[in-house]
Length: 170
Image (cartoon, rainbow, N blue to C red):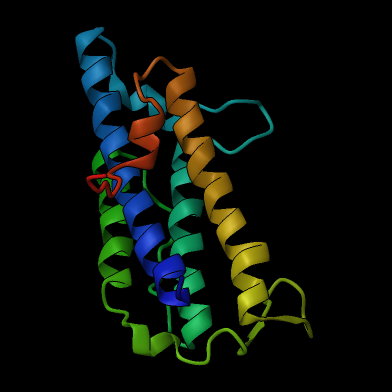
């Protein structure tokens, strides 16, 4: 699997799934007659990020992985989302950004040194950065967003998490 596929294709798919989970959350809230915006501040534990922050972190993980591996600038998102529409727009903005990348952008990225801004003077080789930091961080936050919705009664299941799968006739 190429770095492009791991970085762009997979994270775009999961962000698309995340947007669909939000829609299911709204449908569920509407059918049960409660305000769906309560989901935005839901969390699994008092010391864990709430749903909005999990979405923001998922989006940031995806965009920064692509940007850092290719040396391209990432769009700024000030983390000011407060409504379902703003959260959806944030997700779509990142999916649109990721769509600007091509396989060619990732040529040599596996060996590129990725500086770590939160660890001055330190960096990681691109392949290690993707596999040891970027993707685990992305999946941590997107899985936690999923779990928050599920914990709050949204009827999401494994197929909602995985999204479309490629099947072949035997």
